[in-house]
Length: 349
Image 1 (tube, rainbow, N blue to C red):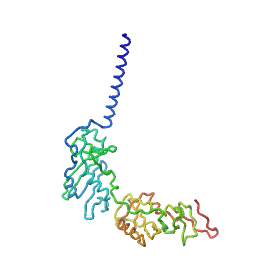
Image 2: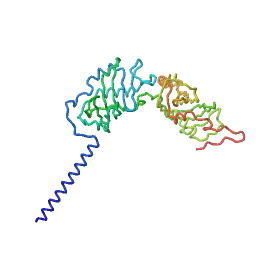
Image 3: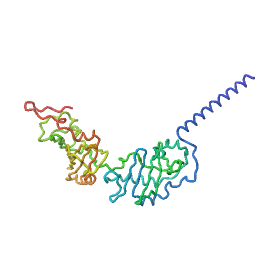
Protein backbone atom coordinates (compact mmCIF):
# COMPACT_ATOMS: atom_id res chain seq x y z
CA UNK A 1 0.00 0.00 0.00
CA UNK A 2 2.84 2.33 0.90
CA UNK A 3 4.55 1.54 -2.40
CA UNK A 4 1.38 2.43 -4.33
CA UNK A 5 1.06 5.81 -2.60
CA UNK A 6 4.73 6.49 -3.11
CA UNK A 7 4.38 5.74 -6.83
CA UNK A 8 1.41 8.09 -7.13
CA UNK A 9 3.36 10.89 -5.45
CA UNK A 10 6.29 10.32 -7.78
CA UNK A 11 4.05 10.48 -10.86
CA UNK A 12 2.40 13.69 -9.60
CA UNK A 13 5.79 15.26 -9.04
CA UNK A 14 6.88 14.24 -12.52
CA UNK A 15 3.77 15.78 -14.08
CA UNK A 16 4.29 19.00 -12.12
CA UNK A 17 7.93 19.11 -13.18
CA UNK A 18 7.01 18.72 -16.83
CA UNK A 19 4.34 21.42 -16.54
CA UNK A 20 6.78 23.78 -14.85
CA UNK A 21 9.29 23.14 -17.62
CA UNK A 22 6.73 23.91 -20.31
CA UNK A 23 5.74 27.15 -18.60
CA UNK A 24 9.39 28.15 -18.34
CA UNK A 25 10.00 27.47 -22.05
CA UNK A 26 6.86 29.43 -22.96
CA UNK A 27 7.98 32.38 -20.83
CA UNK A 28 11.41 32.36 -22.46
CA UNK A 29 9.85 32.21 -25.94
CA UNK A 30 7.56 35.13 -25.25
CA UNK A 31 10.42 37.14 -23.80
CA UNK A 32 12.65 36.49 -26.81
CA UNK A 33 9.88 37.45 -29.18
CA UNK A 34 9.43 40.77 -27.47
CA UNK A 35 5.77 40.00 -26.70
CA UNK A 36 4.32 41.12 -23.44
CA UNK A 37 0.91 40.88 -21.92
CA UNK A 38 -1.32 43.33 -23.80
CA UNK A 39 -2.12 46.41 -21.77
CA UNK A 40 -5.49 48.09 -21.91
CA UNK A 41 -5.16 51.85 -22.18
CA UNK A 42 -7.49 54.76 -22.74
CA UNK A 43 -6.12 55.23 -26.26
CA UNK A 44 -7.61 52.09 -27.78
CA UNK A 45 -9.67 52.94 -30.86
CA UNK A 46 -8.65 56.59 -30.93
CA UNK A 47 -6.77 58.17 -33.88
CA UNK A 48 -3.01 57.95 -33.61
CA UNK A 49 -2.68 61.43 -35.16
CA UNK A 50 -5.96 63.20 -34.29
CA UNK A 51 -4.97 66.48 -35.99
CA UNK A 52 -3.54 64.84 -39.10
CA UNK A 53 -6.12 66.30 -41.52
CA UNK A 54 -4.99 69.84 -40.65
CA UNK A 55 -1.30 68.85 -40.75
CA UNK A 56 -1.81 67.20 -44.13
CA UNK A 57 -3.46 70.30 -45.60
CA UNK A 58 -0.53 72.51 -44.51
CA UNK A 59 2.22 69.98 -45.34
CA UNK A 60 5.22 71.35 -47.25
CA UNK A 61 7.49 68.39 -46.52
CA UNK A 62 7.29 64.81 -45.32
CA UNK A 63 10.58 63.71 -43.79
CA UNK A 64 11.40 60.03 -43.27
CA UNK A 65 14.32 59.30 -40.94
CA UNK A 66 15.88 55.83 -40.83
CA UNK A 67 18.95 54.57 -38.99
CA UNK A 68 21.12 54.67 -42.11
CA UNK A 69 19.56 57.47 -44.14
CA UNK A 70 16.85 60.10 -44.30
CA UNK A 71 14.91 61.50 -47.21
CA UNK A 72 12.18 64.03 -47.82
CA UNK A 73 9.16 64.40 -50.05
CA UNK A 74 8.70 68.04 -51.02
CA UNK A 75 5.40 69.73 -51.89
CA UNK A 76 6.39 72.25 -54.56
CA UNK A 77 4.75 74.20 -57.38
CA UNK A 78 4.75 71.12 -59.61
CA UNK A 79 3.42 68.76 -56.96
CA UNK A 80 5.20 66.30 -54.69
CA UNK A 81 8.80 65.43 -55.57
CA UNK A 82 11.67 63.53 -53.96
CA UNK A 83 14.28 65.89 -52.55
CA UNK A 84 17.62 65.47 -54.33
CA UNK A 85 16.09 64.04 -57.53
CA UNK A 86 16.11 67.38 -59.29
CA UNK A 87 12.34 67.73 -58.93
CA UNK A 88 11.26 64.35 -60.29
CA UNK A 89 7.65 63.51 -59.28
CA UNK A 90 6.86 60.83 -56.71
CA UNK A 91 4.28 58.11 -57.19
CA UNK A 92 0.80 59.49 -56.52
CA UNK A 93 -0.54 56.10 -55.41
CA UNK A 94 2.22 55.63 -52.85
CA UNK A 95 1.78 59.16 -51.51
CA UNK A 96 -1.97 58.61 -51.18
CA UNK A 97 -1.32 55.32 -49.37
CA UNK A 98 0.94 57.07 -46.85
CA UNK A 99 -1.43 59.99 -46.27
CA UNK A 100 -4.49 57.76 -46.06
CA UNK A 101 -2.68 55.29 -43.81
CA UNK A 102 -1.53 57.95 -41.34
CA UNK A 103 -5.01 59.47 -41.21
CA UNK A 104 -6.68 56.10 -40.58
CA UNK A 105 -4.30 54.68 -37.96
CA UNK A 106 -5.94 54.01 -34.58
CA UNK A 107 -4.36 52.87 -31.34
CA UNK A 108 -4.58 49.23 -30.38
CA UNK A 109 -3.34 47.46 -27.28
CA UNK A 110 -0.33 48.76 -25.41
CA UNK A 111 2.74 46.57 -25.72
CA UNK A 112 6.25 46.76 -24.28
CA UNK A 113 7.76 49.57 -22.26
CA UNK A 114 11.19 47.93 -22.27
CA UNK A 115 13.63 50.05 -24.35
CA UNK A 116 15.65 46.92 -25.06
CA UNK A 117 12.71 45.33 -26.85
CA UNK A 118 11.75 48.26 -29.08
CA UNK A 119 14.09 47.19 -31.89
CA UNK A 120 12.51 43.73 -31.95
CA UNK A 121 9.22 45.19 -33.15
CA UNK A 122 10.76 47.87 -35.39
CA UNK A 123 10.23 50.76 -32.98
CA UNK A 124 13.77 51.67 -32.01
CA UNK A 125 14.37 55.41 -32.44
CA UNK A 126 16.25 55.72 -35.77
CA UNK A 127 17.98 58.89 -34.54
CA UNK A 128 19.80 56.61 -32.09
CA UNK A 129 20.42 53.86 -34.65
CA UNK A 130 17.15 52.03 -33.94
CA UNK A 131 15.08 49.97 -36.35
CA UNK A 132 12.05 52.26 -36.54
CA UNK A 133 11.06 54.81 -39.15
CA UNK A 134 10.39 58.35 -37.95
CA UNK A 135 7.74 60.15 -40.01
CA UNK A 136 7.50 63.93 -39.63
CA UNK A 137 5.03 66.28 -41.31
CA UNK A 138 6.47 69.79 -41.69
CA UNK A 139 4.70 73.00 -42.71
CA UNK A 140 6.04 75.93 -44.74
CA UNK A 141 7.37 77.58 -41.59
CA UNK A 142 9.53 74.53 -40.90
CA UNK A 143 7.46 73.46 -37.93
CA UNK A 144 6.86 69.74 -37.31
CA UNK A 145 3.08 69.48 -37.07
CA UNK A 146 2.81 65.67 -36.73
CA UNK A 147 5.33 62.93 -36.02
CA UNK A 148 5.35 59.21 -35.38
CA UNK A 149 7.79 56.34 -35.02
CA UNK A 150 6.45 53.27 -36.77
CA UNK A 151 7.61 49.73 -37.30
CA UNK A 152 6.41 46.34 -38.37
CA UNK A 153 6.87 42.77 -37.22
CA UNK A 154 5.39 40.37 -39.73
CA UNK A 155 1.96 41.66 -40.65
CA UNK A 156 1.52 43.67 -37.45
CA UNK A 157 2.12 47.43 -37.41
CA UNK A 158 3.44 49.08 -34.25
CA UNK A 159 3.81 52.75 -33.40
CA UNK A 160 4.75 55.16 -30.65
CA UNK A 161 5.02 58.89 -30.35
CA UNK A 162 8.56 60.32 -30.30
CA UNK A 163 9.68 60.83 -26.71
CA UNK A 164 7.30 58.18 -25.35
CA UNK A 165 8.54 54.79 -24.16
CA UNK A 166 5.21 52.97 -24.56
CA UNK A 167 4.84 50.85 -27.68
CA UNK A 168 1.43 50.16 -29.17
CA UNK A 169 0.01 47.83 -31.71
CA UNK A 170 -1.97 49.98 -34.16
CA UNK A 171 -4.85 49.28 -36.49
CA UNK A 172 -4.25 50.22 -40.11
CA UNK A 173 -1.41 49.99 -42.60
CA UNK A 174 1.38 52.06 -44.13
CA UNK A 175 3.45 51.64 -47.30
CA UNK A 176 7.08 50.45 -47.00
CA UNK A 177 9.36 53.31 -46.03
CA UNK A 178 12.83 51.76 -46.27
CA UNK A 179 13.66 52.51 -49.93
CA UNK A 180 13.57 56.14 -51.05
CA UNK A 181 13.91 55.20 -54.75
CA UNK A 182 10.62 53.32 -54.53
CA UNK A 183 8.86 56.70 -54.28
CA UNK A 184 9.94 57.73 -57.77
CA UNK A 185 7.35 57.40 -60.53
CA UNK A 186 9.60 55.42 -62.89
CA UNK A 187 6.84 53.53 -64.69
CA UNK A 188 7.69 55.16 -68.02
CA UNK A 189 7.07 52.56 -70.72
CA UNK A 190 4.74 49.61 -71.11
CA UNK A 191 5.49 47.81 -74.37
CA UNK A 192 4.84 44.10 -74.77
CA UNK A 193 7.43 42.04 -76.61
CA UNK A 194 4.86 41.09 -79.28
CA UNK A 195 4.52 44.77 -80.23
CA UNK A 196 8.16 45.27 -81.23
CA UNK A 197 8.75 45.03 -84.97
CA UNK A 198 12.32 46.29 -85.36
CA UNK A 199 15.29 47.91 -83.67
CA UNK A 200 18.00 50.15 -85.06
CA UNK A 201 21.35 50.05 -83.23
CA UNK A 202 24.40 52.33 -83.25
CA UNK A 203 27.35 51.21 -81.12
CA UNK A 204 30.30 53.03 -79.56
CA UNK A 205 32.50 52.33 -82.61
CA UNK A 206 30.08 54.02 -84.97
CA UNK A 207 28.79 50.76 -86.46
CA UNK A 208 25.07 50.33 -87.08
CA UNK A 209 22.58 47.52 -87.60
CA UNK A 210 18.88 47.20 -88.39
CA UNK A 211 17.02 44.13 -87.09
CA UNK A 212 13.46 43.32 -88.13
CA UNK A 213 10.78 40.64 -87.84
CA UNK A 214 7.28 40.07 -89.18
CA UNK A 215 4.00 40.33 -87.28
CA UNK A 216 3.21 37.26 -85.20
CA UNK A 217 6.71 35.78 -85.33
CA UNK A 218 8.57 34.60 -82.22
CA UNK A 219 10.88 36.65 -80.02
CA UNK A 220 13.89 35.00 -81.68
CA UNK A 221 12.84 35.82 -85.23
CA UNK A 222 14.76 39.09 -85.59
CA UNK A 223 16.97 39.13 -88.67
CA UNK A 224 19.26 41.72 -90.28
CA UNK A 225 17.19 43.90 -92.58
CA UNK A 226 18.33 45.99 -95.56
CA UNK A 227 20.97 47.15 -96.05
CA UNK A 228 22.34 44.49 -93.68
CA UNK A 229 20.43 41.52 -95.09
CA UNK A 230 23.62 39.62 -95.97
CA UNK A 231 25.06 39.84 -92.48
CA UNK A 232 25.17 36.61 -90.47
CA UNK A 233 23.74 36.43 -86.93
CA UNK A 234 26.10 35.25 -84.22
CA UNK A 235 23.02 33.68 -82.59
CA UNK A 236 19.32 34.33 -82.45
CA UNK A 237 19.45 35.34 -78.80
CA UNK A 238 22.24 37.82 -79.58
CA UNK A 239 19.71 39.62 -81.77
CA UNK A 240 16.56 39.22 -79.64
CA UNK A 241 18.19 40.46 -76.42
CA UNK A 242 18.88 44.03 -77.62
CA UNK A 243 15.83 44.02 -79.90
CA UNK A 244 13.50 43.56 -76.91
CA UNK A 245 15.52 45.50 -74.34
CA UNK A 246 12.97 48.31 -74.10
CA UNK A 247 10.23 45.87 -73.03
CA UNK A 248 12.32 45.22 -69.88
CA UNK A 249 13.02 48.89 -69.13
CA UNK A 250 13.41 49.25 -65.34
CA UNK A 251 15.17 52.41 -64.12
CA UNK A 252 16.70 52.46 -60.65
CA UNK A 253 17.20 56.21 -60.42
CA UNK A 254 16.88 59.51 -62.25
CA UNK A 255 18.54 62.90 -62.62
CA UNK A 256 17.95 65.94 -64.84
CA UNK A 257 19.32 65.42 -68.34
CA UNK A 258 21.02 68.79 -67.97
CA UNK A 259 23.27 67.18 -65.34
CA UNK A 260 24.76 64.70 -67.82
CA UNK A 261 28.49 65.33 -68.18
CA UNK A 262 29.39 62.90 -71.00
CA UNK A 263 28.43 62.35 -74.61
CA UNK A 264 26.20 59.42 -75.65
CA UNK A 265 28.12 56.22 -76.39
CA UNK A 266 25.29 54.34 -78.12
CA UNK A 267 21.84 54.77 -79.63
CA UNK A 268 18.95 52.32 -79.65
CA UNK A 269 15.70 52.95 -81.56
CA UNK A 270 12.76 50.61 -80.97
CA UNK A 271 9.93 50.44 -83.52
CA UNK A 272 6.53 48.87 -82.94
CA UNK A 273 4.08 47.38 -85.41
CA UNK A 274 1.63 50.23 -84.80
CA UNK A 275 4.08 53.01 -85.63
CA UNK A 276 5.56 54.04 -82.28
CA UNK A 277 9.31 54.73 -82.16
CA UNK A 278 11.32 55.25 -78.99
CA UNK A 279 14.78 56.74 -79.43
CA UNK A 280 17.12 55.90 -76.53
CA UNK A 281 20.62 57.31 -76.07
CA UNK A 282 23.04 55.77 -73.58
CA UNK A 283 25.58 57.55 -71.37
CA UNK A 284 28.37 56.12 -69.24
CA UNK A 285 28.49 58.72 -66.48
CA UNK A 286 30.94 58.98 -63.54
CA UNK A 287 28.02 58.28 -61.17
CA UNK A 288 26.38 55.44 -63.09
CA UNK A 289 24.80 54.24 -66.32
CA UNK A 290 22.10 56.51 -67.75
CA UNK A 291 19.81 56.76 -70.77
CA UNK A 292 17.52 59.40 -72.22
CA UNK A 293 14.28 58.69 -74.07
CA UNK A 294 12.32 60.41 -76.81
CA UNK A 295 9.20 58.95 -78.39
CA UNK A 296 8.30 59.72 -81.99
CA UNK A 297 4.56 59.87 -82.52
CA UNK A 298 3.01 58.26 -85.54
CA UNK A 299 -0.35 56.68 -86.24
CA UNK A 300 -1.95 54.76 -83.40
CA UNK A 301 1.20 55.12 -81.31
CA UNK A 302 0.77 58.87 -80.99
CA UNK A 303 -1.03 58.78 -77.65
CA UNK A 304 1.51 56.47 -76.05
CA UNK A 305 4.35 58.51 -77.49
CA UNK A 306 2.98 61.68 -75.94
CA UNK A 307 2.61 59.95 -72.58
CA UNK A 308 6.21 58.72 -72.69
CA UNK A 309 7.53 62.16 -73.57
CA UNK A 310 5.57 63.82 -70.77
CA UNK A 311 7.36 61.61 -68.24
CA UNK A 312 10.76 61.30 -69.92
CA UNK A 313 11.47 64.72 -71.45
CA UNK A 314 14.32 66.46 -69.65
CA UNK A 315 15.34 63.44 -67.56
CA UNK A 316 18.13 60.87 -67.62
CA UNK A 317 17.25 57.48 -66.15
CA UNK A 318 19.75 55.33 -64.33
CA UNK A 319 19.96 51.62 -65.14
CA UNK A 320 21.92 48.75 -63.69
CA UNK A 321 25.07 48.00 -65.67
CA UNK A 322 23.54 44.70 -66.78
CA UNK A 323 20.39 46.36 -68.19
CA UNK A 324 22.40 49.20 -69.73
CA UNK A 325 24.58 46.69 -71.58
CA UNK A 326 21.48 45.27 -73.32
CA UNK A 327 20.97 48.68 -74.97
CA UNK A 328 24.63 49.13 -75.89
CA UNK A 329 25.98 45.92 -77.46
CA UNK A 330 28.74 46.08 -80.03
CA UNK A 331 27.42 45.29 -83.51
CA UNK A 332 30.14 42.64 -83.87
CA UNK A 333 28.60 40.71 -80.95
CA UNK A 334 25.33 40.36 -82.93
CA UNK A 335 26.32 39.87 -86.57
CA UNK A 336 29.29 39.12 -88.78
CA UNK A 337 29.67 40.96 -92.09
CA UNK A 338 29.52 38.76 -95.18
CA UNK A 339 32.79 37.50 -96.60
CA UNK A 340 33.24 37.83 -100.35
CA UNK A 341 34.18 34.17 -100.68
CA UNK A 342 31.65 32.76 -98.15
CA UNK A 343 27.89 32.76 -98.74
CA UNK A 344 25.72 33.80 -95.83
CA UNK A 345 25.07 30.93 -93.46
CA UNK A 346 22.00 30.41 -91.28
CA UNK A 347 21.93 31.80 -87.76
CA UNK A 348 22.86 29.57 -84.88
CA UNK A 349 20.17 28.76 -82.34
